[in-house]
Length: 134
Figure 1 (cartoon, rainbow, N blue to C red):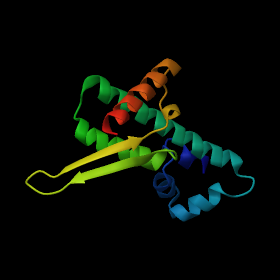
Figure 2 (tube, one colour):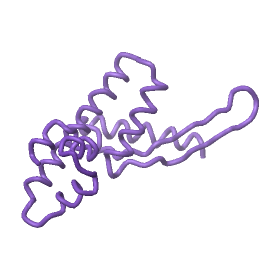
Figure 3 (spheres, rainbow, N blue to C red):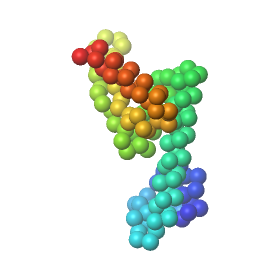
């Protein structure tokens, strides 16, 4: 089981595929009494996945890659991998040739590995932006 978890990024489907079983079987195994090491290994893989995602997001921000596709991918991964992540608001304007969808996301400041001063600066910036719309 530990070999199947290693390198899986904490994805049940990958572990199940490696073990040739259903994802429900993997979930049940993770909850078995006495299998705390297995469960911790799975959680560690999730942390690795989040770390890689954070690195990717920083690369996107720094190098200005295709933000539309990258943003959609990052939102999907954060929503599925980070338990505290959730969309805050979704605003849509339908009609015409170009419908507009604007999504405001809520990500806990501690979900991003930044120095405390940078986190505070981001929070102040977010508060100022939110105040503009009120």
